[in-house]
Length: 170
Image (cartoon, rainbow, N blue to C red):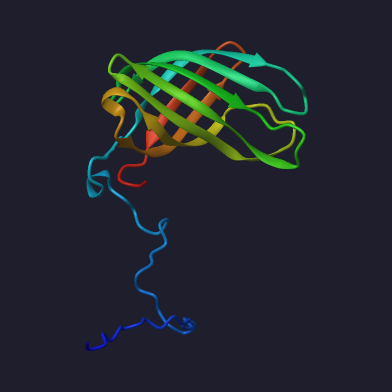
């Protein structure tokens, strides 16, 4: 019987210093169009909503929460009902006011994450420009992505939130 010869792979470590690794790309460098990703569509949110805020003061260490309830009109969605919970900063040196926002229609929902600029501790949600990104969609919006800014004008008895999407940037 003839002996079979087996090829064995040698295991080793190769230094990569000084070499350009062409197979990697930093994900935040490239603008991504929804059309480039199969099955996803970019949603350019443009429009506004109005309604009533409700301030929820709980444990001061956790921070103040403002609940927004309202309605409006947003391109790509049509008439919407809006609900949001913006959480302020609590007992922390620096953080961001943030929270989820839901836009509901008869055809589905779009859930955004709002994030305000960096602020100090014990800051309640207030008027200003927030960034948003679509976290999830349901119904006909289940395969949508998008982001942009939302300008919040928050009064004691009313609010206005104006959306400005950033087309073709994810």
